[in-house]
Length: 197
Image 1 (cartoon, helix red, strand yellow):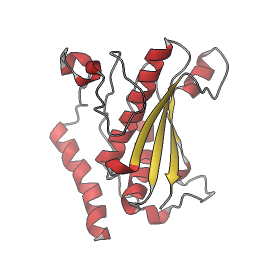
Image 2 (cartoon, helix red, strand yellow):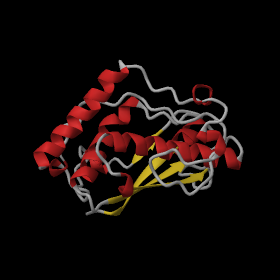
Image 3 (tube, one colour):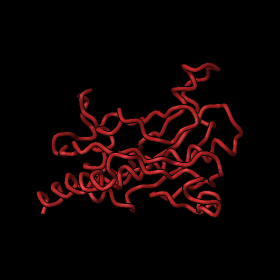
């Protein structure tokens, strides 16, 4: 059964990517129409967000890497090996964007494989934004970022019930400066395992 699950984790994203013909999914407000669920405040994300969205730029899903032959048996969550992809627990974003950057595809694939192989594991995705923009906008942006990571995890085998998305907006910065180097560190989603197995 475990071999079948791993095969599906590899085959399903490849089939998805082949069907998309390498074009990213367009989930902007213009593509969704004026009555989109993003504007109505409904949670269309994969996780259960605890904050309300806004009608700013919406989540975009980038094509995922088909190199998801990563087995969670290769890694453990308590491993101190810096090469362990499961030890990477922060996904960074570009300014005012919720698209997962390609450099984090392997990290997300490793976490998705771990979740698929450990159905009792639970994860909280904490979305954050930098200080620019209104408080309400940044709460929505943090939520969209968390939902974007959740969608990527779901496409690679994580179950919906394993994921919880929360947004802190600009309220919990890791860097207190008022320049691009500080803002870049604050535009993030933190991966927190609330239950490991």
